[in-house]
Image 1 (spheres, one colour):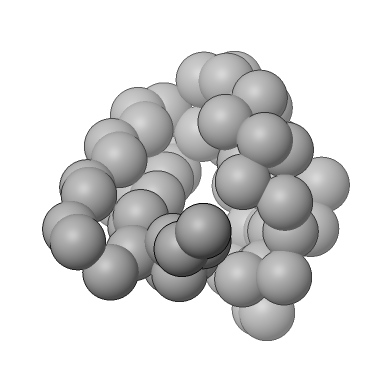
Image 2: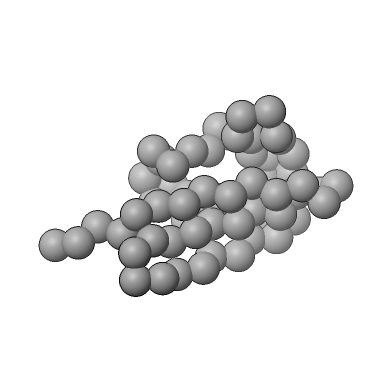
Length: 63
């Protein structure tokens, strides 16, 4: 599955360990997921087997 900043947050939240993901030239199997939250954005950090990481930053929607 290709991931990007343009993906809906709900789709990013559905990614589980063991899933295959890719972004740009990085791809692999998710071994750990960390979500960091600030006032401005959510940052999804997907650790892959083999010590690579894919980071996706989503701006929070302000109503």
